Amino acid sequence: TPGQFIMPPNQFPPMVVHQHRPAAAMVVNTSGSNKRPRAVTGSGSQPTSRRQKTQAQIDRRRERNRILARRTRLRKKFFFESLQKEVTDLQLENLALKEIVKT
Image (cartoon, rainbow, N blue to C red; front, side, top):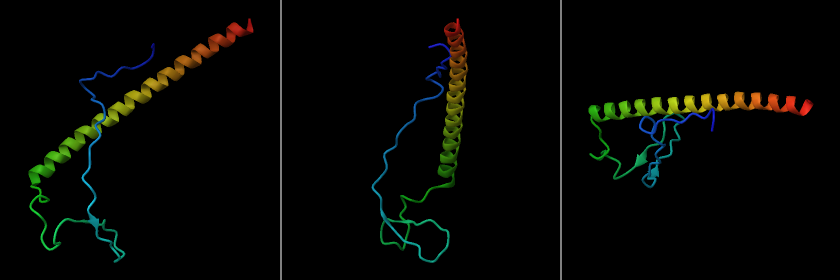
């Protein structure tokens, strides 16, 4: 339709829904501090090696998140720009139709 913005598919892929693992038991914090509750995965005394991440893994994840956040913001920006253009076009069409009805 005229005024509709079509985003190139190779630049902005559709949103991906990730599957999450089942929730682990949560430790309830009654100390009054603002810390988030942590998941309990084993005996509780030692963190498992699976949960430990190297700084490089953390940095890669942050960079991926930064890129995805930028894409999401751009997608949202283009979406609202196309909506605004559609609103303007419809307002102009509405005025033209009102003029036709008047005569």
